[in-house]
Length: 88
Image (spheres, helix red, strand yellow):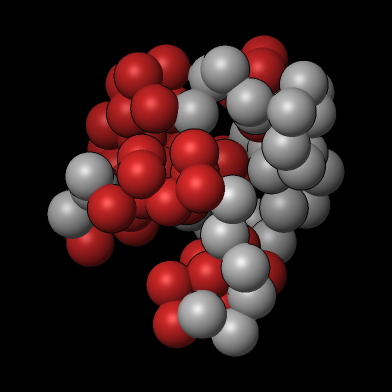
């Protein structure tokens, strides 16, 4: 895991979003890859760039992930990425 700065308030909000939207595939707070990649502790810029690639179509997003990501606002998505970055 990367030691990095993150917004603690957003990370707390992101933890709740993770439990609701992401836990099934990114178990244990994103530390386990049950059906997706390990996201916990990834560099925040990497998480942002990867999500931009998914949303722009430069990288194919799994259908089940797209459905959940589409349900999130930009602020919620930012909170979720802050949560993953906070896992140090």
